[in-house]
Length: 125
Image (cartoon, rainbow, N blue to C red; front, side):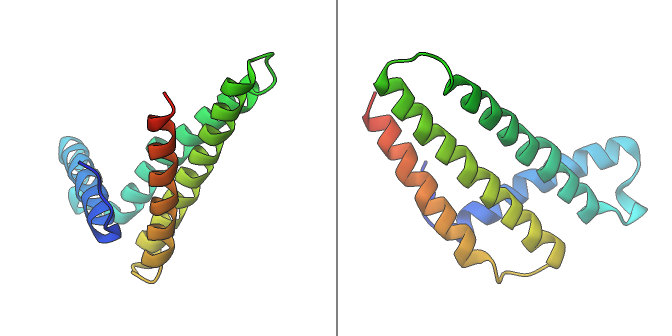
């Protein structure tokens, strides 16, 4: 299912992440510690941003290989995709830390661009 509505993406992402965190916190007995939002921030950083940065590093390394032009172009689009994901995650993280929805339009713009690249890459296979 494709999410085009920013609010749906944001809410689903937060719900899934919070469910994972609640489970971890319950397992560790940390739910009442008051560090829940800090934990959510940590999850976005460690399981989101850092993983996209690792992928981006690999794609940048691949760009140095002697690859056919078609693969180099695809690699460029994948790098753009990763950069947008990183920007999106950082903006979501910022919205959570500031407890605001003022970044919703920015997040939505990232998601629209991400969707365009996904469609383009899907159609070029």
